[in-house]
Length: 436
Image 1 (spheres, rainbow, N blue to C red):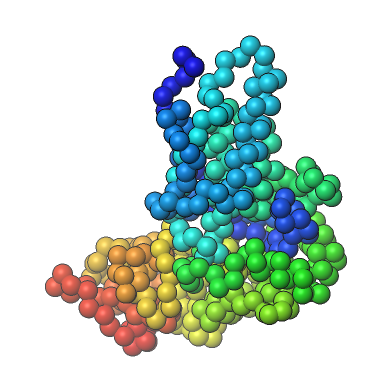
Image 2 (image 1 turned 90 degrees about the vertical axis):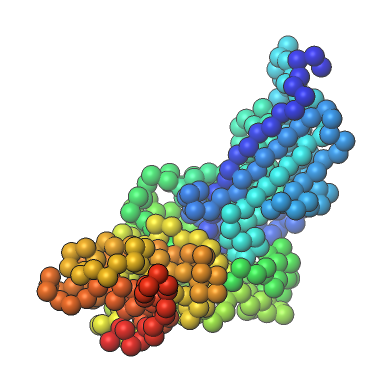
């Protein structure tokens, strides 16, 4: 066609979402229709996102796909389902627009390249962000508008929730064709600005049992899953929506943890059982509960995905090691940026962002610290700041202490070590001794 460009390229990004009411199990495997509704929090794309570029040209001989810079199987059934549906919607739209010039021929092949800036298949909903991004990119490429969460769902169930921002529910629906199994926004991303999310990737390796296989095994063998879908989730969905609308973190945090616990209980009730938690996960769970017990209310909520720990809180998060009141506790400003692969805490090192041997007085308040992985020192695990009211905050301007000392004491609080800058080299000191 004379008016067509030789190559048309569109690039889009899509966010990760983390479920607070879990989806686990399908009533229709081909259409990916769930046995229960679910609800998630969409995370900010500054930290976690999928970037997808789609190109279409009359010179392309076949459809092709690259995932994280490596060519992948474009014939995957779910990918083909999304491609077929998007092309069908494009034909339908062009058929109803009589006289409108078609910008691209639907017979042309498409090349798709998708990259995640986070570990794939490690419990961070990489498939959800990936298929949401794919569908949105193809929609832009083909000029398709309207409800697209149904199409994204056919690639990965939870992908329909990544089509929207803020707090999103995925309705299980009742129709056999799945037309009513779509995503709806419960509240926009601006609804709860005080909410903070901290993500800890306790393992960057692929899951031992994939979600698709694990769900099917649970549906076939777990009596608890059937009870959960029919008797538990409907009530929890209504409660969670109410907590979100009222910005009630006490209820939100507790219900999130309860539903996460039941999800993992269902995995254990599956035969053979599915194990997604490890020792690091269990220590993080215990830490969140001890912190809440110390404050006498729920200020931190933790939810465990298949290989990921997500901890949320309002305003700030305090990490403590040892009993409540321990002098080795340290308050941290929660989650400005958390990236990289997290190993065991004993492999972390705490570093002042600016290596200064200066009296802390007022300057230590708000001074940023980085937590780095010792085995790959350039890998930043997390960032924190000393807050007013911290047990380690200086009690008076004359108290002898330095920012570097605080890094050592933070290392002790996390059960690791802090690095002390000396003669332009980082040499480590035992955190336990520095924290006393």
